[in-house]
Image (cartoon, rainbow, N blue to C red; front, side, top):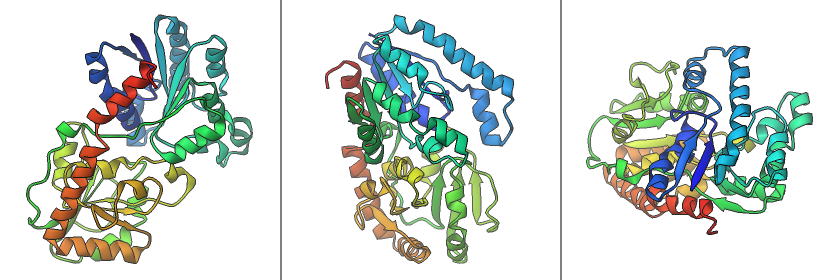
Length: 352
């Protein structure tokens, strides 16, 4: 079987790496030959994360390359589209695929429909508010990372909806074996675009860092919180991320409570828990399904609750160990690549 993956990013783009690329070796082991064609290239990601502007000519090249790629779809048995064929363009090409009886699956791990229907640009909102609904409706199968996305797919009239959470390769994540070390490291991993959630909780960390035995580690963002030298900013790489997370004693995932955040798939929490680390997270969206209150972590809503739960975990190594090990068990039973690869295989092989 030949499958064409039309991803949004190259492998270093988090959503594409986790929703597509990490499955390719397992698909190949099951006789599925994968060809991947990202919309944005690696240079785009480097410029995006460094805050550099992308020239219009470069964008035109991305659209033209994707357009040319569509002429090869007849070579493949299945097409998998990550989110949409052409960002900020009508769903015309997805409709053409439907008219040509080309079966495609479309995959979502974010509420990108809100880029359109909740856009502050009135023209974008008017013209594209139903775009993703149409992409879902024209598809043969909609693959979603959480229930909020599934509800949107159902509303759109999608024929088939499959829940496939964003997961980790459990073999890469080794369980933390030391829970009583000092100082206590509160850690966050992400990108410059999601660092805003940490920034909004800066007052909480300011109070925590007044304690002598606490540090804050930020992986994947470099913007200074202004909280002094007890905050360490660490460069992310795929090769180093597990080791960096393993140095955490507590993993955090602050979020706002808005429609966009409801589409997030709690991947940070899954990474922390995969390393046997207890978590504290905003009680928003899928976080409520990943975190079992008081069993593998805590769900919080206010700054006071953030401060209380983080202080509690910082002071009690036995509690950190208990919750961390329970978190690892949940990842082993639900949120790992090995278990969820079978779901993707059944989709591609039409066994659902």
